[in-house]
Amino acid sequence: MAHVAFLVADGFDDAELRLPFERLSEAGHEVVTVGEEANRPLESRKQIERIVTHRGVGDVSADEFDAVVIPGGFSPDVLRLDARVVALVHAFDRQHKVIGAIGHGPSLLIEAGILEGRTVTSWPSIKTDLENAGARWVDRDVQVDDNLVTARKPADLPEFIGALLNELKPGHVPHPKVVPAPSADLEERVDRVGPH
Image (cartoon, rainbow, N blue to C red; front, side, top):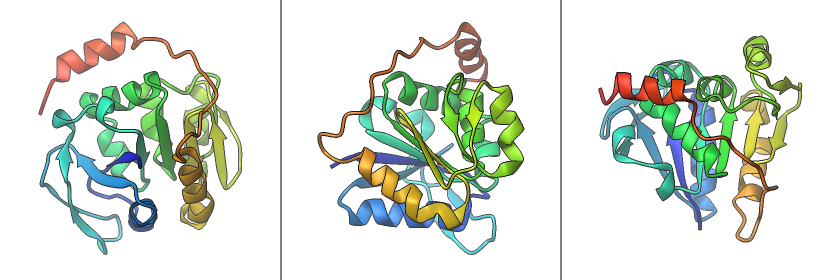
C-alpha cells in the first residue's frame, strides 16, 4: 500500500485533514502528518481538532512517500513560507507522485511553481492567484490533472477522497509527464532559508 504524507501547520481545516487521513488509513495506506517540526502540537482553524505532527519537513524527502495531501484552512499559507516545504512539494511533482490539495491547499502549489498549464480547482478566493500562476481554474468538486488531484471545499471531500484512492490503486499509472528541474530561484530560496 501507499505511504502518504499530510502537510499541516496550525490553522488546518478540521474535516479536510481528518476525513482523508482516516479514509486513506482505513483503506490500508500508511499515513503520517508532516509539519515544520516533528512532535509539534497543532490546532485546527476551528480549534476543534488537535494533532501532533509525526515528522518534521527537515527529516523527510519525497523519495520515501508515494503521495502528499495538502489540507486547506490557514495551514497552506503558513507552509508556503517555509522553503523546505515548498521544495518538498516541488520534489513530489518532479518525481511524478500524487499531490492532493483541497480548499486553500493549492496555494502551496503556486509557491512550488508547478501549475503552469495545469487544470485545477480550489476554494474560489484563490482562483485568480492560481490563474496568475499559469493554471486553468475550473469550478468542479474534484479535478484530476495528471498527478494533481484538487478539490474546492469540505462538501467535496467524498469525491476528493475517491479520486485520491483511485490514484493510489496498485498498478494505477498516471499519464506520463515531463517535469522541469527546480528553478534556480527555488533552489536559491531553499538555500537562503535553510532549516528553521
